[in-house]
Image (cartoon, rainbow, N blue to C red):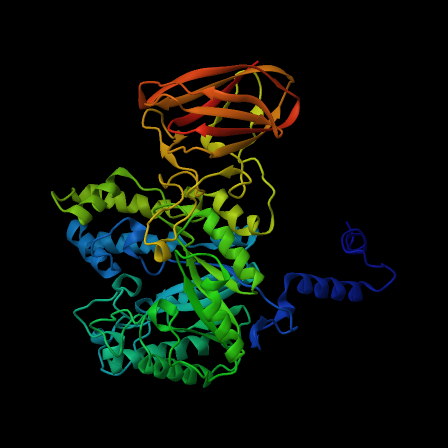
Length: 598
């Protein structure tokens, strides 16, 4: 195909002009389509805008667990700081093999395919959780006191990530997640060693942090796809009363925090006048007492939000700060909850023009887009680290850790499409969609856990949909089984069948919806596979909104895990799309699947 034909067919340009001019127009249009003309992000009053002055709503993910492992992401709940995990691995399999694991982890965890996928799913930004020790030596290991030894690995990893973001027209936000010495008493989030001076106790650690930001700013000062510098993650220290307010949630002054953030800002502005500087309050990002007034014209306030209600009151303190300081606000970290919570939070945030970065993209565990699969040898390592007992064999430890590193690759993770749908589509739509194709022929089976994608009370209804424990003091978590899907529906694994699951803890009034594609109309028997230790459970069936079977007894099968079938006969199904709803009139049973028999 000629240049002229290509342009005429694909770009709609007139072809009665010179080829040179055509090529110029093609290049210009492609650059415009790719977003390169948007330029640097900046604060414009209460909005984040690009250089065209267009409002930019950041929708992103934090890369937790890549440069900085937190124990809970690995199912390790005892001594969960990364340095302690590493020390214990060295004890189990030696320093050389431990280094091999960490090299593989860094190489595999985040790659171009991850960023490509985020873009394809609808996200436009990434928050890089940086560990300072990938960029510079700890203060106590510096050969010359007061000097900074720079490490190539961290900068090279950041350069690669930035190149992948550029290729996808996505903004990269640099977040110093683990500071020199650690920024508070929540030791896991900053990999803090309590036996050494923390950030607030050490001028040398503070100067190293300032120097690192100056180095980063100088390196990236001319790159518009660096969205911002998030200069300190979740400071959490009670400066005035560390004994009774160890995480700084009640701190009234915050003078050391403000001073350090001002000093970092000055160091950045000495080399970089263009990029947004993001600051975070004390108490895990939310306590801004003593921080105002602001000291720079291109700033954004970050806050973090976990396990509370998604109502206007939950963000009122930050909306007030935005109004009073005339500055944009950004939810720099949130997540670790159910799909219902995610959808409600994003709807609330975007209604208030607040961008967000979810946490994390992947971990060993669900409620994120990618779940890193564990393995038996790794499980033995986790059990030993958490509970003690006999040491696992060195060869088994090495095998389990290297398999885990391989499983951090996107193509080996479990992709949770329901989480992505809850974040990107569901905040703006009540529409339901099939979770699987559900083509119905004679003998077809639909598993209970494959109910439709959509919001609570649209695709399903469950009485316990999210974790609000910071306001209720009652820890619930939507799907109590914490497996397969992240909605309110409670799901557990079927130990009798490989990679099969069933719905459990079914209560009165709860229901599940299935969009079917019926190959041939006719009368069908619906064979339900259930387990119940009770008598009296009942269900009703609706097809396309109309009751087709009412108050059907669910038999007592002799046990909550003893599955058996019962039939509902002579139900007429039309050809094509049909929507089946199964309502629990009386709960107390487990539900595995439905078989359709014509």
